Length: 219
Image 1 (cartoon, rainbow, N blue to C red):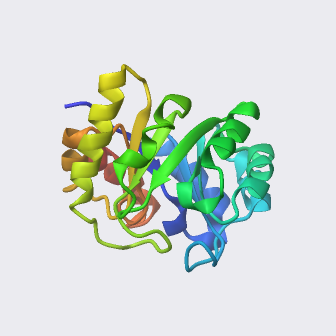
Image 2 (image 1 turned 90 degrees about the horizontal axis):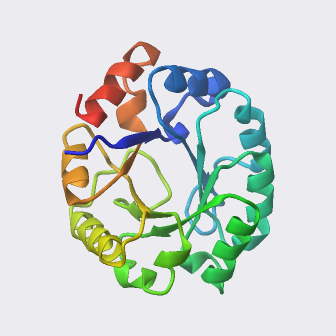
Image 3 (image 1 turned 120 degrees about the vertical axis):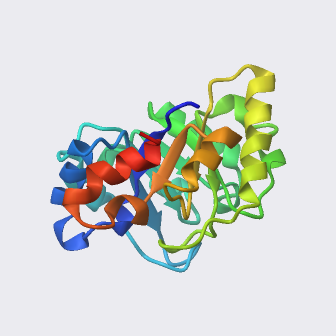
C-alpha cells in the first residue's frame, strides 16, 4: 500500500503558540502544513486570515496547503497566494465561476485544488479535473475540527481515483475530516494520496506528534 503524505491541520494546534506548533509538526515529519480558512459565512466558524499565514510562512519550508472555505472566494485568492500559500483549494459552491477561480490560482503560480463537500458528487469534476492539481474530498461537513469520518466518502474517493486514472492524470486526492490512524488505511486503499489530520496529529502534545504522524502513515 502506498504511504500517504500527511498534512496536519493547524486548526487543532494551540493557537497561542502557532509558530512553535508549525515548527514542531514540521520537525515531526509532516509533509505539508494544512491551513483551514473559514469565514463564518460559507461555513459556521472563523479562523485564519492571510496575515496569519504570512506570519507562519517563515516557520516552515514545507508546502502550505490552504483550504479556502469562504464565499465569495475569488477576492481572497491573490491575498493568500501573496501570504505564502503553495496549494490553494476552493469549493465549487463558493463562487459563480469555479473554473475562473482555478485559472486565477494557477496564474499566480500556485497549485489549484477543488474541494468536494460530503453531498457534492464526484461528477462535479467532469469539466475541471484536467485543469487542477488536487481534489480534496471532505469526509466531514466543513466548519469545525474534531468531527467523525463519514464513511460514504470512501466511495467518492474511489470514484475520483477512477476518474483520474482513466484520464491518465497526476492529480492528487486529499482527504480531510475525522481521519485517524485506524481510518487512514481505508482512505489510502480507496485511492487517497494525502491525508489531512488535525486531532489525530496534535493529540498528546508535541512529544507525540512524530509518533502520531508515523501512525497515520502506517509506519
